[in-house]
Length: 113
Length: 109
Image (tube, rainbow over all chains, first blue to last red; front, side, top):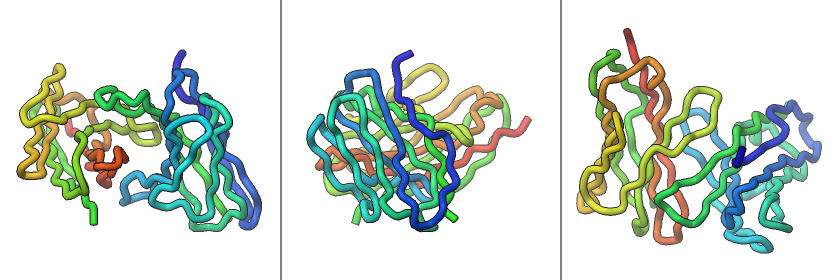
């Protein structure tokens, strides 16, 4: 089934540890995005990639890094986790045709303690 | 700054009609999206409006007025499964999506 796979589904992480959230899509979409979703706030863009080999910073990039070595994979790394990074993280992709919207992964629920 | 406003929560009765409003102020406009998000799940795409007017898709319709910076999502013949959050998002001049905080819709029997 075509779509986006995120891993892990959930994780409890000690503060100061490094963590990589994985995201893989099989739709050959050029654009990919990482969002965090916190209660009472809208989805906030962390980083994005318009095509393989390029990345850009979103609204809340501090403490996070991404890479886009190929079309399918877009991992998000927390170099040294802090409690304020406790959130639900969604990866999304887009074909570039706005009328089709974005496709989202099922999310990673991260708790930093 | 950029801003998307929508009500935090709404309640409606099964079988009825509900209208969820969204107002926006963004730097540029390249379309407005509505997404549905059930609790604990990912958002799923409902509709896209880039021109003024009404777009109808079955029980769901979405309206846009660009001059007023206003949209609404209309849900007819409400079903219990429509209980979810509804997210309004606007694509700005940089083709980035700006998201509202979402409207939690509670359907009562």
